[in-house]
Length: 94
Image (cartoon, rainbow, N blue to C red):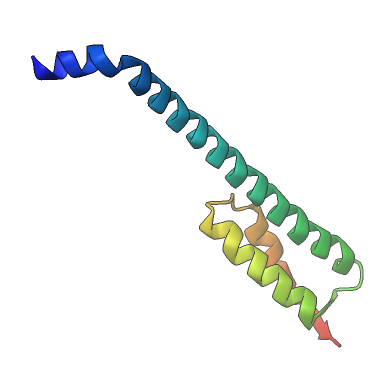
């Protein structure tokens, strides 16, 4: 009985709180998607710059690896794995 009275008394606050949690959840999900997209674009940009010559600088490789690790932690898809494997065969230049 106390639960029903609590809900009757505070239903406005309860619905507001649940609505705010929903908005925060959707916002966080959007931020994660945007971050994954940005990381993927950074890795593809490095790939596009290096694929013609099969050469990569150590800084580009380091940037790619950092982006790759974060991308995988955010559960990014696996098409980027193939690019990472191909980069292993590239010549590292200064």
